[in-house]
Amino acid sequence: MCLTECLAASCCLCQSCTGSCRMAARYMYGLLFLLSNILAWIVRDYSLKKYHLFHYLKGCRSSLDCVGSDGVLRLSFGCFMFFSFMFLTTVGTSSTKDPRDSWHSGWWPIKTLGWAALMVMPFLIPPHYIAIYGEIARFGAGRVPMILVSAVCFMASLFTIGVMIAWFVTSKDCKLNVFFISSTLCLVLFTTLLSVNSKVNAGLLTSGLMAVYIVFLCWSAIMSEPLSSTCRIHPHPSGGKYDWLTIVEFVVGFGAISLATFTTGVHFRSFSLPLKAAGADEGQVQYCYGVFHFVFAIGAMYFAMLLVGWSSHHTIHKWSIDMGWTGVWVKIANEWLAAGVYVWSMVAPLVLKNRNFS
Image (cartoon, rainbow, N blue to C red):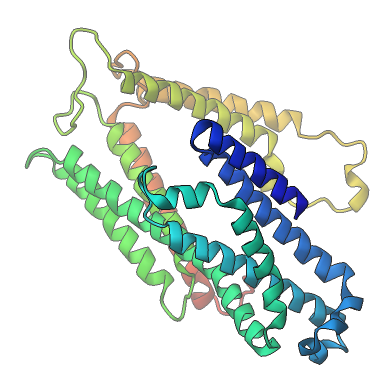
């Protein structure tokens, strides 16, 4: 309490000098959240002897785990109520002239006392209500983030598909791009519907991440079409001039090749069988030098194909990488293969019922 009051006072002093202390407010809220976590840890591990002060907790006398988890849930509920109240009183604030801006950035003595009160008040709540909050917290902590990430993935995928239609279907002659984009959309819909099937029940998170990946591959494939293609919103620059986006794409692509090659060479053990003995790591090198250099050797061939457009007879423009129809079809095939492997991973347990996939 003394620490929070001192920081609150310093923030108030900051407000009186500069008119606002909005950046410091984030650290104050972070400190209150950290203190809530520390209190929950102390209550769980060190305050069992003090629980007799709360007669509502008599149902947990015979179980140390019950008492500790009950206290954690009560402190969690207090922290949840504090930040929920702050959310409701500050949501939609868009101007520093809004009175809620000063409420968010200041009034720390009152907010600190309110936080402290909410840390104590949940211990007066009957245990069955806390048990209900525990079930809600289980859903909120585990399901809500997953749902949000899944929703963001699907929205990003659909938005990107819309952008591809607007940018790469510029005329009726762009039938190949229409085929690429429509097939990608069909793959997204098919894998999503299959993942939520009651027999598969793979969930929306994996299908959402897969949707982002295959849409990215489609985007990358279309971007690899020759710069002379008429079905691009950004045709090849004339007069030897190149915009900053073209140069950035080239530099990022080069960096991605180097990074992917390096990490694959170092982390090759991810693709190998586990060591037979626990002590096999003693005196062993951190990574296999031979595999490391082998990956770089393959990477040398790969960057050659990217720079020449997968064809030694292909004309390459300056500041371009991975341009050509061969590269397009390589990426489209990669997209279809990735979707096929994902679909097989979902239906394999239904087809091969005698095998253990756990």
